[in-house]
Amino acid sequence: MDLHRFKTITAKYPQLRLAVAGDFCLDRYLEIDPTRQEISIETGLPVHNVINVRAQPGAAGTILNNLVSLGIGAIYPVGFCGKDGEGYELQTALRAKIGVRLDHFLHTDLRRTFTYCKPLVLEQGKPPLELNRLDSKNWTPAPAPVREHVISAVQQLSEAADAIILLDQVDVPETGVITIDVLAAIAAIIKAKPGSLFIADSRRGLMGYPPVSLKMNQAELKALTGSRIELNFDELKDTAAAVAQKQGQPVFITLADRGILGANPAGEVEYVPALRVRGPIDIVGAGDAVTANLTAALAAGASLREALEVANAAASIVIHQLGTTGTASVKQIEDLLFRV
Image (cartoon, helix red, strand yellow):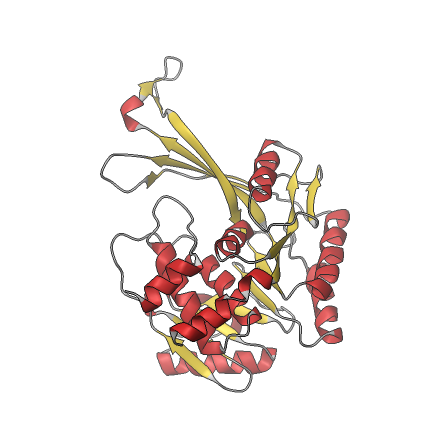
């Protein structure tokens, strides 16, 4: 892909309408100054003094953040937050994002707001040190009104959006946004509209997903196919091609420090090696940057290889952003691909 082609693809981003259906959480960063540490009179334990609090959308919200950074024209989050303080912060953070439309985002007292609270110790001249994370999650199945809201939203957006991203972030099945009922509704949409672009990612694996495009890492590919051995590179390519043919949609495999692999149902397989590391890294958020950039590029008409090149560069940018779940802009990607 040359610079002219890159500009042709990304020039379409402001006209795109993309939806993100999945588990939105609040990433709450507590910045701690270790020089202000005290000892609690009551317990005798160290007290960490927080000097700043940052809140931003996480999980599916990280994908959304990346779409915002790319300048996507309209972005529709499909999910929920609770009627709690964290929900207020999450809605406020989403509302502040350029291009984000909250028409399909549910504010409900039936669920808690999914929250990752991340204490960070800030020492001068050192990368931020993350202490034990504090999570707030839902442990019971999503109630029927929540599932029905998600299904209705996805059905409406399948008519209006250029692509829909599916992100399953929860550890316990059926407790989040992407439930069996939602997947069945998506299968019906695809049957009625075979050209619909859905891209799915799930931390619990993609077994049983309808014929959508799949994005996964090497371990998730192994679990999906039931392989009991480590696959060499040729076997990875063959396996990705077989999964793409079975799905009838492109499949993408992230290979950590080796790069990214893609295959489509026609048997085309492309590989893009990882770009060189340029200093300290933090891999948190790299996979979400890949998902966002693959979707945007494909929705804008990119080929399989072009989408891989854009997504690979975005991941390289994100891993060099420390102490936050980063994003990559079109300009940053352009500079890395064509000006470095």
